[in-house]
Image 1 (cartoon, rainbow, N blue to C red):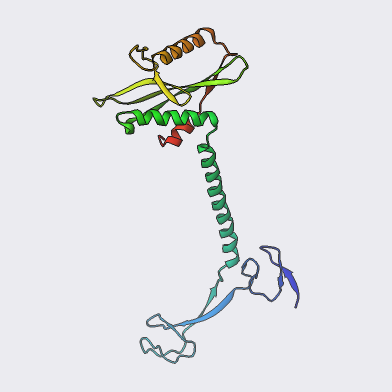
Image 2: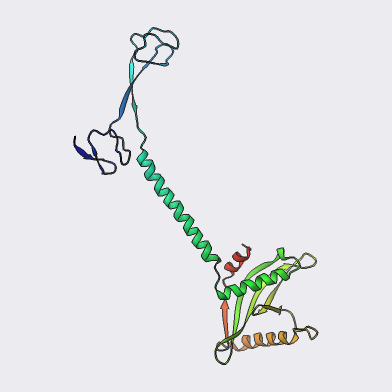
Length: 230
């Protein structure tokens, strides 16, 4: 017995092998003789004297040779395994992207909490919309440390009449202070805080003081995704 290399996969196999034991490549095709009745056309056994289906005598019926191809099981496995690996990789990549997309940093977490609080304050929370304007404004003290943070974002929602209205919410750290369009109300318990907020924002817009203030843009897509708004 001699060893040869399979023309399909290159592995060593016997020269008498009918197919490759490694990849399933058919090397020797199996020929099967078949006999058919000349009257009814149905298959009969080679040793039959008469057709078991119609009773016709069987004398000179031609014998046909049929080539039976073997299934390449090895090739099927070779195809299935890469597909399974690709499917696993796709699932893993999707999971990683989804995790990274929903994982918020410290600034984004503050913005997210304030947006959720704003939604819960609304008459109809289900109508809440978050628009593509959201940033943090960090105030630094004389030592350069952040002592408070404003979260400012544009939002919308249904009012008492069902109409959609929009405004810009202002939070100081995790507490709602006012809407940007509001004017400080002397009868409001947060009147002084509202005056400070208005003054801070006006000074920042006029001076652009980057030593005292740091503006941080928020990835609005991550906030929306976390809130289920996409």
